[in-house]
Image 1 (cartoon, helix red, strand yellow):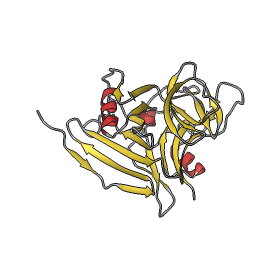
Image 2 (cartoon, rainbow, N blue to C red):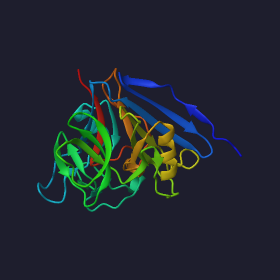
Image 3 (cartoon, rainbow, N blue to C red):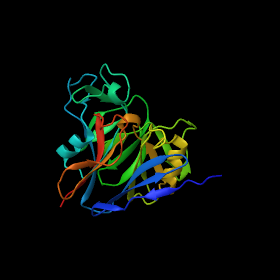
Image 4 (cartoon, rainbow, N blue to C red):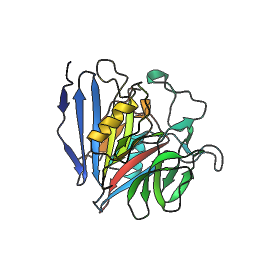
Length: 267
């Protein structure tokens, strides 16, 4: 049996408490991006940010689509990944030149969403969420309507790891993926973006493969965020101040999304 061969990039420290690196493997072709955030650092903050403004007030739609790097620039994030699954008005999911996701389109996230203590989305059924509480502790909880203690909330579609146990659905299809997890102490946030749908270069991961990867990265809790053409990780260049896309989105460019998960540094 052939063994997978891995090539690592240099570990990069964006700002104190934030590091990222990439890994390329063969058999199967895999390319992934990992960011580790030290939650004990008081100058680091985990935040959820919607795209553009709510287009219809109390109506169905909650935000307008916006590219993650533009959201990050607006919010002064130093690292960003795409967030919740979402619906966009009159758009069917497609990739590349066929993708209809454009800046300014009306959108609604499928899970729960909270930004700076303001609930702007609740889900019809309980879904796994990454939660920042008012005391700044971070957990992964399953909920539909966030309680008052939840200061930042972003939702996924399925748990990958619960209490150190792989609970991923047995779905074998590989896709680009974005996942978030916490270590046993709840003091390290691990973000993983997996490139995919690039035959011979990056085939993506199944849920089970994603869960195994998050376990190897030290996660005791983990959930799956939106994937496919939305999957993206970007960081701020400390020298230029500009956001740099690290991963390789399947549209050939970053996709406009409804919300993001960002990390920012404050003095």
